[in-house]
Length: 203
Image (cartoon, rainbow, N blue to C red; front, side, top):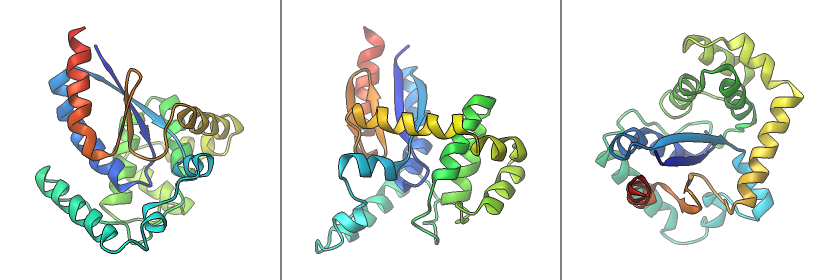
């Protein structure tokens, strides 16, 4: 069974798009998905990269085209629930630590789905601890346990280590995928990801 590593931060709308499309790819290829929580801001700091709004803000037509491309992607895959978060950019450090905690508690998938919905469907301010706790509780998660773990040094250090490991692996942005040593960046590469997974499954 091939493995797909997904370098992930809730702060990227393209991470939302990718996560929603992946189940069909995983079903077709028989691949196993492994989520690697990182801090996108940390990746930017380590690599010298910038958010698209800063990197391309002065390029005529660039951001407008990116928005058009995202609209096309959403329409193609019928991602009709997506709403661009009105609080963007959201500081994701707490919810990313929460994902590390959720992995330890064995509720990773439910946590991801709840937080993605809160971020990119409900447009909630997911850097406010009270909003985070309420969203987790409403999603059927043990908000108290997760919020407590978020404050622990072990969880904080794990997220830092994940972020450094991703940068060491060549990651410079989100979403990034690995099939073995092959790296793919961006939701537009999901077709290539599927081809690589299919090939890996035959070996």
